[in-house]
Image (cartoon, rainbow, N blue to C red; front, side, top):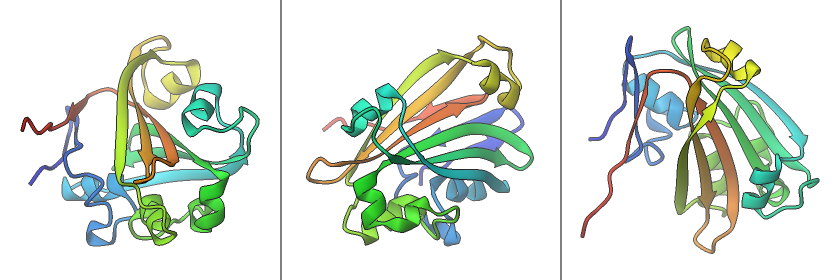
Amino acid sequence: MPSNIVNAEGMTRDARSRYRQRAEGGAHGAFEAETKRAGQAPRAEVEVERSSAPGEIATILGVEAAADVVVRKRRMYAGNRLVQLADTYIPAFVAEAAPAVAELDTGEGGIISRMAEAGLTQSSAVEDVTQVRASAEQAAALGVNEGESLLTITHTGQTDDGKIVEVTRHVLGPGWTLRYGVPLD
């Protein structure tokens, strides 16, 4: 079974099964499930607000730049080590259908499960991995120098009928390996 590895050298994030196992052991999302599976203690500091999304994210969501969206800002830890910053942007129509996505505690399986319960099942996700220069705020949080290269993952979740229901921008601290599997048939 695909699995994540968390150790002193860093983290391996195995995308081949992470979203299907998001409620494993009562976990409140993929990060918690995979970190526990790797023998670590996951923790997240969460802030939730209604605000507008940055221009690039608003474009992906298909909303106006000034449109009100739910923003979930998370600082995610493996033990006491901050390993990633993750900001999730959820369009208003999703928050209306699945109000729990705007709560601090979204329950077992996290926001993807709350969306599914409301009839907005994510059937696919696209993840764009890019390198960015750490801002002063990111550098201070993740313990790197300002301007140092960091990996980001922009996760876009959509339903069978093509509705974009979330965009999450993960900014990863040092030491990450991203593992993907692609069928060749």
